[in-house]
Length: 218
Figure 1: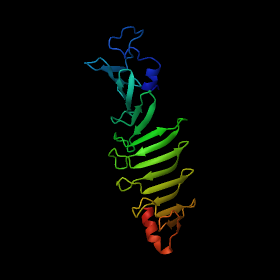
Figure 2: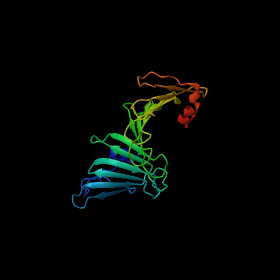
Figure 3: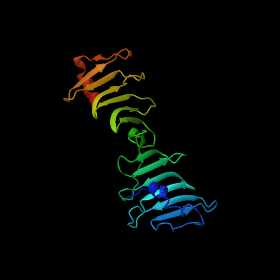
Figure 4: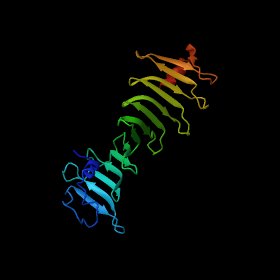
C-alpha cells in the first residue's frame, strides 16, 4: 500500500496541486480529496483513502505543494496513531505515535542517516512535554534518560546491553548527578551501589540498604 507521500512523489497528485487543474493529463484519483485556501487558492489539505474502502485514513496538511505533516489512522478505529512531520526540504523529520493507541500523541521518533531509529522522545505524563529520551543503535535500545519528577532536570539514567536492562542510576539527592545505581545481572540479580560524595565513583552499598534497593527497583 502506497503512503500519501509516495503517491505525491510519483506525481499522481499533479492535478490536485493546482487550483484550476490546467495542464493536467489525468484526473485526481477518486480516493484523494483536495481542499484549498479560499483566499489564496493554495492547497491546504489532502484527504486520502489509502485502501479505497470508502473511509479516509490519511490527512496531509499542505502549504501549496509542500507537505507540512501527515496524520494517519492505520487501523481505522477513529483515532490517529501516526503523525509524520516534514522539514523545509520535504524530508521526514520525526514520527509521532500514541503509546496507548488512543489517539493522543505522546512519543516522537527520529531516524539516523541509515533510516534506523536513533532517538525516541517520550512525554511520560502525556502532556506534550518530553520527560524521557531513549537512544537506539540499529533500532536497539542502548540507553535512556528521564526527568521522573518533572522538575526540569534528568534524575534517572538507564543502560541496556543487547536490549536487556543492565543498570539504572538515580539522583535521589537532587545534586544533578547519580548517587544510587542498580546493576542487574543476566541471571536477574541486582547490586546496589552508591556514590556518597559525588565524585562519580560508585561502591557497593552496605547490606543494610536492602530496603533502599527494593524501593529503587520499584
